[in-house]
Length: 519
Image (cartoon, rainbow, N blue to C red; front, side, top):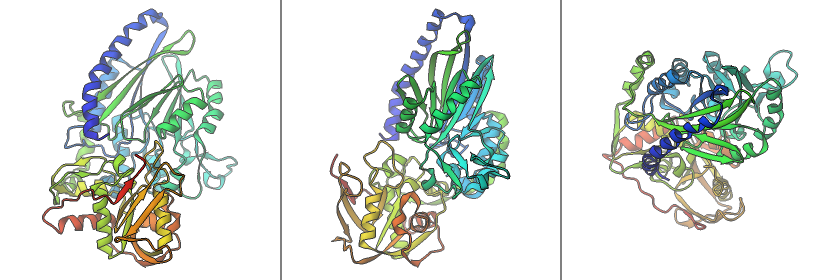
């Protein structure tokens, strides 16, 4: 579903949801109100910039801070949660490596964050520094360091960077246990380093929840950065009262067994509010009320947050400078670029191929991060850097046709799953047809290069990023050991900027480079 369609759906659904929440509350009259304590969870996820997004219409942590303070006036028992992904990627993080987000969260009053996969993009040492700067607590029960990296005298793996596996907070006499769990695939999709380990979420939860109960936790909250499929599996395998999640960049609610799961859209376009009504006589969760609070330009920013904005004003002005124009909307959303051909993906791949003179180009769709349809008109530095914020350098490799086929097979190996795989290939100089109903590794029906069937024994030059070509990122290990022909000095975003500024206006389109036959 497009973000535009999703917005329309929200406009229809949100009033109804708010009515449901209002109706649910009087139902509490059936309970002994003297025995009920209300704990309010405010939550966001996948927040990459503290300023508003969508041409200032949505988001902004200054507005979120206003909401938090308003809710606190009528619900004093608040926990403000962030379900992962904030240090990277973003335009500002290219320069500050996430320090600006930590400063913003400190001012906004965040209580807990779980590691997201992108917390590790700058490597483990940078993340440890960000953790030291944080006035809130980091959780990650299944993210541990090998003993030799965890500090002197360590015998058992410890939570990464001195973070917590879980925490237990007492609010109005009720003990709330908060458990943090992270995507195991972070090991290959980011840069956590060789000494950081990721255990299976279910195994970790089954091991720790009894310990949390023994320590007095009456209600268990899992703060997760997992796919919805993994969150549902978690709810089925461990006794969790509620899951607050992230990762999909989409407003999602679900129920797995008796466990509700809530996720918000990216970049604080909404704040989720969940009221846990807890019976103090039994220590059990009696009921749950929830609502979605849109973060719009009708909400004033908290004046206390202005100091953060002023500090980073110079870079914000620089990012507003024009680079070029587009005469068509550019699809830079996460979901399409991870599942099918897009005009933005094709244009970037073309820029890679033409900028290096390679036969073909391939990039992982997960590198396209603007998560928006950029409207026709002027393109700014922020637009370009928000599309490709990782500052990956390019490489030109010489590989066999067999290696290219393996790369495409890998790129579509997870396309039939409910997750949006970051390795999905956006391409140039070639076309392929695939059937996702077939077994992974045998899905590509046809692969052509410059109009000719691929020669498996022949050699081709391919342009890609160092993340894929040298590091084997997103599982592209087949490129490791390939002959390095050239390593250009420009980054991926610089190549893109050059391609845009070289013409009066760009107008990329979907050309049928990628065809899926099982839909």
